[in-house]
Amino acid sequence: MKYLFIDIDGTLTNRYGKVPLSAVQAIKWAREKGHKVFLATGRSKCEIFDYILNIGFDGIVGAAGGYVEANGSVIESNAMTKADSDIIIKILENEGIKFSIETDNGVFNNGKTQEFLKYVFTSLGRDIETDLFYNMMTKVDNFDNMENVNKILYYDTNILIDDMRNRVGEKFTIIPYTVKEFGHNSGEINIKGVTKEKGIIKMLEYFGGNVKDTIAIGDGGNDAEMLKFANIGIAMGNSSQSLLKYADYVTETVDNDGLASAIYKYLTK
Image (cartoon, rainbow, N blue to C red):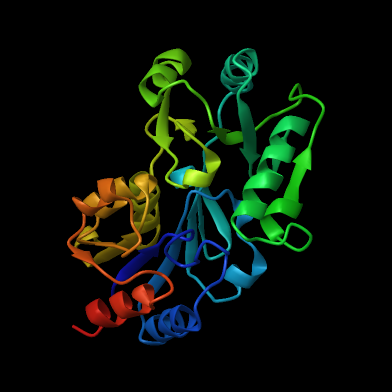
C-alpha cells in the first residue's frame, strides 16, 4: 500500500479551479486498489470545497501542514497566537500592504484587498459572480477580532521577501507566491516549523505508515519540504523552477493529465 499526497492548486486543479476528469478517475482507481490518497495543500479547511472533497480522500493535510484531518477527525490544528497575528497585521497595515487572513472558518480581507483580489480573479479569467474562492471571502472593517489564524497572505509590495522575513521575526516562515497575478514579492506567512512534511508525518503516525511508501505530488514553493521528504517526489510540468531540483520525476502539466499520468506510473510498479 502506498500513501499518496496531492497538492491542490496547480496539481489537482488548474488556474481556473477545474479538476481534470483524468485526475478524478486516477484517484478513485488508486483508492480502489487499496492505496491511501490525501490532499496536501496550502489551503485552509474552509477553502477545500465540496467538489474537491467529493472526489474522495482518506485525509487532509491543510494550511500548509497546520491542519491535519484523517477519516473525518481533526488530529492536528496549529494556529498563531492572537498576539503574534496582531503583530503581523500591524506591520502589514503600517506598510499599506494588501493582505488576507486565513482561519479554518474563513478568509478575511479589508476593502482594499477585496477590490485587489476582484481584479486578480478577473485577470485570471475567473467569473467573480460564481467563483467559489472569491465568494467565500469576507470583507471586514478591521481585524481586531481575528483568532485561530492559520496563515496570512500578502500581495504586491516593494518589500523583498528577505526584508519581510526580518520584519516579522523568527517565529514565522515566509514562502514566496508563484502566481504572478498577485504581484511582486507576494508571500504567505506561516508559523515556523509548520510544513506539509510535518503534516504528512502526523498522517503516517495516525495510519501506521512508513515514509518508504510515500509519494508526494506538487507544483509550488510550499511543496518543497514534502517532495524532499517523500520516498518519491513528483513535480508537475507547470511547477515553479525552484521546485524542480527536489523532484525525482517531472510529469506533464495539469491540463495535460499530469496528475493521472504520475499516479498510474508509480502505482502500477
